[in-house]
Image (cartoon, rainbow, N blue to C red; front, side, top):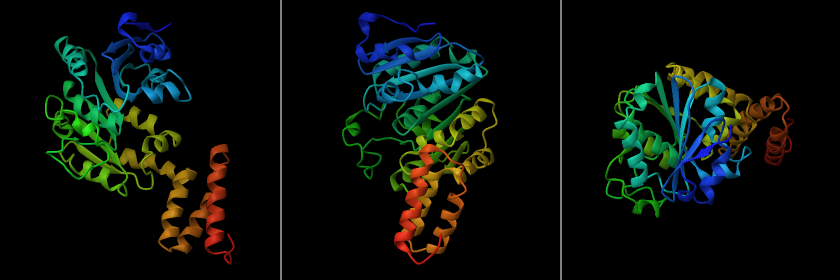
Length: 309
């Protein structure tokens, strides 16, 4: 079924390009910078926050990540899309969620899962307050960009001008009513780790994902961990133990092994690096892994040309 639109007169070109966002979906413009994509399904609802550029330029052009994650399970899905680095701090977005609360929209579902990464992870946490008891999965989220609350994160100077003090503002406070909130981050990414530390409630799981850098979502997707993680959240089975069992897939993920080798190589731990390279040689053949293994081999030979690998 072709996606339907709220009002063609309200939509700009980027809104209309969301026309492929999945079977039976409709798209509603929320001002010039945001849109909502909704498709009815079963009793579990996945709410994702995504960026337009990723939807419109990815391998599945026009399809939201929510469609890819929810449709195979038969779940309902709702995606909030941002055109630009808005952090979803917009009156139109506030009003949209207010309307859903007033209509008791979220009460109609057995389980609700909020998901996002980075800027979208912030929004997943911040807006999860509209559905008490929801599960939250956020990858490297910011807690806030309010300069009065933190002056140590200078990465997003333009976004810091936005209002993070009004409704849905401070993300760690907004997840207090969640049944659980999984905050994933790479501890080597210092600023991400500092934000993660601000999420410290009893319902929070801070889950370290070393050697994933600033491409955490891409790594988890490539390892097929992300869909399983969302499934676990939707089934009420998300625990730290479940996550770390899933995260064992990194041992077969050449980009992860490449990052690990790089860290070992730079710290002079050559013997351990050799062990990583031997292990990498047994990783199942896959087109996008071949280059990473070749790079591992080349770098170790350059570092220790006398050592057989």
